[in-house]
View 1 (cartoon, rainbow, N blue to C red):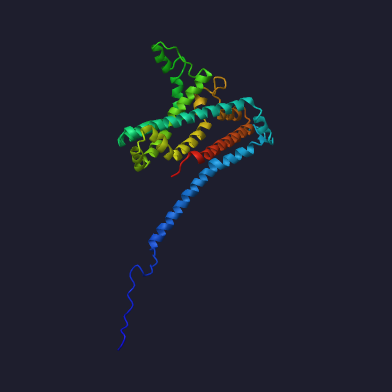
View 2: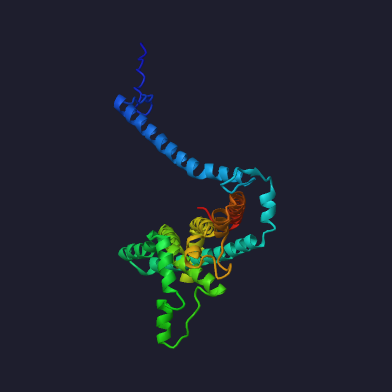
Length: 320
């Protein structure tokens, strides 16, 4: 009796080894061109940042150790400019004014932007969101200098339109820009009005990205609108809030255009910010070494505050 030997089963498609995918020469050339184009764009960006950011910072750092009035050659000062900074009361006062106005600007900008974003996200359609995003963002596109000049005429004590219409109702003229507190409050409000569109657009986009199933689950559990906002929406968009807070604070710490154009830092030194002190020291008093030292101290202060924001974000920011 002969044994029947059966042939082994043919391997299935799943068992067959995968053939290496060979790219066509045209696909390889396309990938190479895309890689070259990407590296070229990165190189241009790095060149731009190096030329217009890193090199000026290094130049200011080096110049801060010298005394230079442009006319005569620079002379070595060592740490003298920094020692002078910590004993210069007007400059220290300008840093205090900068911090106070920056905190007010950031708090108002974030709170108002979030409030408007929540209203628009809940009460309007897609067309309404687009309309309000465009409307609130338009002031940000306007020139800061042009807005400052216009607002200077609008809030003028004698000839301003606001005091004129207040007078029609028997309200006495308000010294918007001629009293220390009034000037600070007016400049803060103008900056917030022009910059709130930035945070508003960010918050609207963040609120639209909140998962619907999470909101439905909260409504099933009986959470009202206020509780949903503070317990679910704000924690979920906290990374966006952190980003907006960091960018807004960096911009506010460099406030220059509005107080310089509208009040020239006055009345007195009420609106003299750190950047105005830097400008006056360098371009009016021709003390570019000391002005560079002020700039480096301001840079270090911004870096320190930004670092504190990121440290605080470890407990306050929720990443999905």
